Image (cartoon, rainbow, N blue to C red; front, side, top):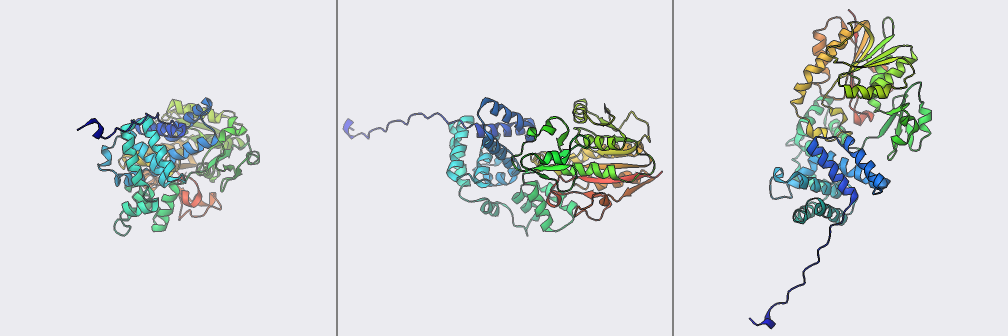
Length: 472
């Protein structure tokens, strides 16, 4: 073949350096921390955002987008995994976790935001080039182009089994919850399809930031003077910040006179504080006080009545957080690091006792969406002995005529009514108090005497409370 008959070579494309996108790189780093270190996004993300702002890389809109990308991806992880699995040629477990994180971020931009399709794909491919390299960026590009062929509703119709054939698996895929969590929540609701779908949908919504005005130190009127502040729904001490409201910008929060606290947690403390007693009302105990939100509210309420609060927390570093939350309390209090199952105080010492026990945290999936993927059914067996031991100790710690509040941030029946029923069988001389009248105006509190709050009904975490009076 002569030189003249050869096909001329095309000039090689010049190498283009990948464009670094600080917002998406930060979101990727946060997801990797959650996956690699079992970190929680609400603890990982704030310092990353502060660092980016300090470097001048971020403004408020960038921070809002990064936050949406991280939390939105974690909340919808189960749904996105099902979609991505339908678009790759291998089992999902064979996709490297960093690659899967980039794909999930891309899927959220395509299916869960208003970012235009071309921008979502190109930004994700550029992110892949920066953090994974050009080779795997091509794989990301190919997969996300398949994802972009339909919207979220279309994809869920394809990848979720029909409701009539497998209702739990259908809801698990559509609403992005593990199947066992769907089953447990359904049992706790005891209702039909409407209730469970509303609850699962509420778990995937961004929670409002709620502040508490600590009595004697701050007022709701003061907090309501802040931009984007509106009254709470149920607690007289609650103020909600509209989207974009920054608690750290509130003077009372910076000074510790107010705090960030879900309204459900406030209601638990208020119900215990308002429960009727027989006899004196001078000594209160928070037996599982970390990180200190309920203790700070209880301490302020106790001070108004001339009572003293003892806040006990097993872990010394968490006891330090409790001390920080209570610093400046208007009345006397004490914070100690002690094991609530082997307490240093004498039996029958207290008039009111709260034990907000360690649990699976299934009631706070709006705030910690990664917990739904991290928890396993066998975790219930781990918590069960501790929950029962703490409630038994609380009943021993209260005097005859006094009241114990058993609380947990989980609606799972194995962590709520089962614990209370088991312990009370072995602890004669106790009566359950109807807690519902102590929270007037709240709808949907059920048949009692205990209380279960719900995100879809009350806009709170799914807090549980049983109030128990010691009678002998």
